[in-house]
Length: 316
Length: 314
Image (cartoon, rainbow over all chains, first blue to last red; front, side, top):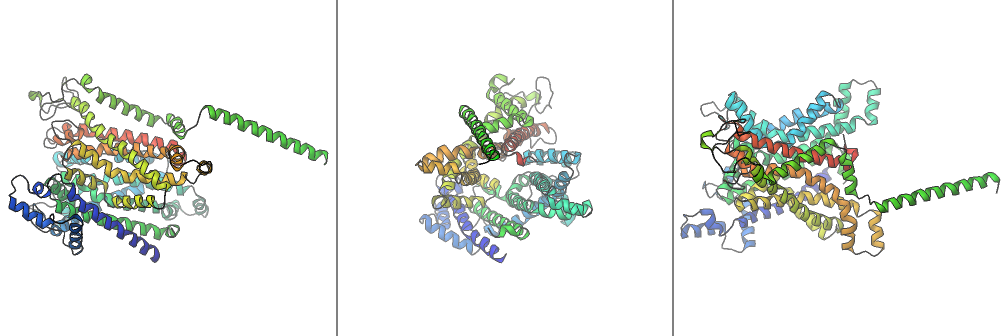
């Protein structure tokens, strides 16, 4: 197991290195003269020269990269052009807000998806199975931004049960209940797609296991159906579910963007969006780097958990 | 040799001849009608009613948008301010009017002329590039293949939505940039599908046989391997088309795609955001169209996958 973990950790290093190159090259994607574009039409010659020097644009590309990478490794992601504060100071707290939203959505997806998927498989072709399957197919096709608007219209604007935007009430105490109140609609909107994916996989994975001989053997031993399904079947159906959950967790880091924009949830997605609109390249780069880093980390953790549960995979 | 044994060997001969004849007959029939994997796929798909209905629905949507100028009751930017925000079933306006008094049904028909190609063209381009990359990577696994796959691994480290938004956003708004960003984020995923299939196929006996006959690598790759890796690619491509239609609309919704006044399902959804509380139909109707189109692509994709591998039909 330790061998496997070390091997996987080592494989991550070149990927992160490549990621840094791709993100660095983002600056080159900006059409026209970078410094002039970043500063907009009212830029003076001096300010353009200053930003060129700050970004190191006057040096050859590879030198720029090395300089940039070393700064990053020391925790310096540069300064945001619009907000004029270090990128790290913006990205870290915003990322934390996104983690709250992503975690809540993932929790909904797992807590609803796994039981519904497993029960659908156990009672194949029952009404629960039909509703679960149709729901999963619909959920996978639902545009997140549309669902967010529908939820907002029904539950915030019409019924007034939940707030339409933000993380905390301005006049509220900023406590946990306030946060949860604001979290409900965005997290449901974001959960739709991972929920559909997890339900579907939990169902197919359980269906594959439930017909195997050892389940028949467990049943023959006279175990109650509950023990058969939740202790014996689920354990073997779990590895693919964990794999896909890991992947979905990663995608949520990006998938929250639409909900964050619509519900003005102050997360990294909304920040990235605003940075993109303002062509704030250092901030875009910082946010992307942070997200990619956590995405790789999440996939790594998911792989390790799966390998831990399924010794056959470790040998590979 | 005893009589019994003679009878036995005669029977064996008979059986052998029968088997050979059957085999020859089948070979002859197969020679007349080659059972390519694509034809098998089509035969199996025809039996899947849901998938077929979805395919017909998509065809109708495509036709409706192509013939929008003849079908649409109004011009896409023709406004009737006195009726602005009127709900669906208003006389003469089946799906109601938007904030500027434009007919929503008309704009949906015209919107498809942007929303569909902006997603489908990149899928086609990305598939073309990925098939070539995947074939090369799967066939020359050491060396070139290794390099291709390691480079693509890097793109796996980004959540797709975020990468595409960042690329499209930095390049600036516009149809071309949206398409470019979708092509870039799709290539790693489709290439991996082709790569995996190529690895499996290139170990098959018929590939070895072609090589023994002295066929060049190019010939083996294009006439032996390629036809046998197309099915998984088509399945993946179909399913991803639905996702990309939604995603491209999402980019427009965020203001990173095509720019108004061009109608597009994403922009139409966005335009209803400010009037959501008074006229929810402006935002929700285009979203429902997106949902239905994505759903249909998914169902066709599922049908293709089941047809390809009936074992997966669970």
